[in-house]
Length: 392
Image 1 (cartoon, rainbow, N blue to C red):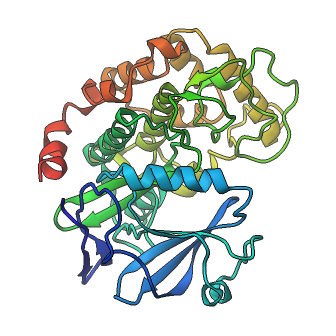
Image 2 (cartoon, helix red, strand yellow; image 1 turned 180 degrees about the vertical axis):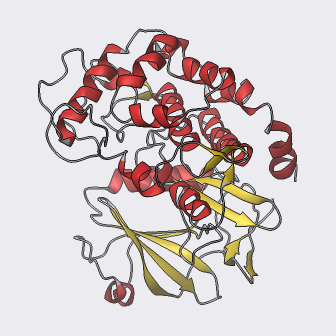
Image 3 (spheres, helix red, strand yellow; image 1 turned 90 degrees about the vertical axis):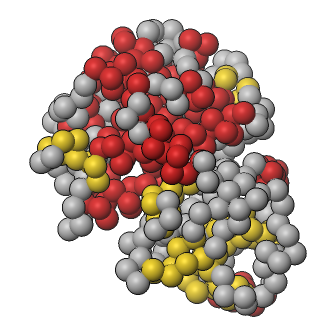
């Protein structure tokens, strides 16, 4: 098994070089002593910190806020990460059931549990910032005075994401929260940009999903009840009153729909250069990020996010059972997709074919993640990515 190594680049700083699968942490990889260097991010279920182990490794510490309420979720995430190692999945290093008092003293956002558990993960850095970056960060940084990311380069990253999801599905695991914020980008001289799937808090080990999960606008129509609620309130992402279901759903086909949404929103990003001198659109990157939370076009129902959310749910409900062609056509009028599609001015037949297949309203007719790897969308990058990353 190839192990990860930390390397220092004069321009990029510290980053994790190429590594492959793993089984469980060895004694040399366990984290005994460490110090907290700062906060990376705060979420509803956990806070993320940058730490340095006593052996010099820089890692990420995920501190769960409530041990008792999240016991099964923590156990689930740890099990999935520990036994399903892959180059495109963020790597777990160690797990502490209870963090010590010295660590808690450094934490600026104390968890509700007096002795919370902590998950130690590899530090994935984009090559531009000291704290690493998500897919959105990577796109923004490339478009912020550093030039544009080539369309083929973006497809290489998307191919890796699909590859990672296909691997998870082959192991019986569905992610169920695929979105740009949960994709991290590592950059190294050896293999270039490597996509890593993160945050397995919504993942399930059963192919049939049984819980309400997802984030606007990346969840599939099979989660919406036939009688959609007449009004929707609350903030994004999805709340339990927004989305219900009448039966178990295929969680892996749910992932495929989410992949389609991810591809649509990334290739339409203004930092992606489809041809020399031709970007996806003219709007700035800050605006495109805000489109995931609030539609900015004049066609809004009455100018508030709640009505956009309701319109989106109604449209999604109507997509159940329809063909992918019908659904993709309808998306041009739906909040959260309307702007992305209007900015995707150079869409071609190969892309249309991809979207019409992944947005199939009947999950049974939707392709698998493994099927997506052979789609024409990736014909120009497949061989190069397989050789650069997976043949080492």
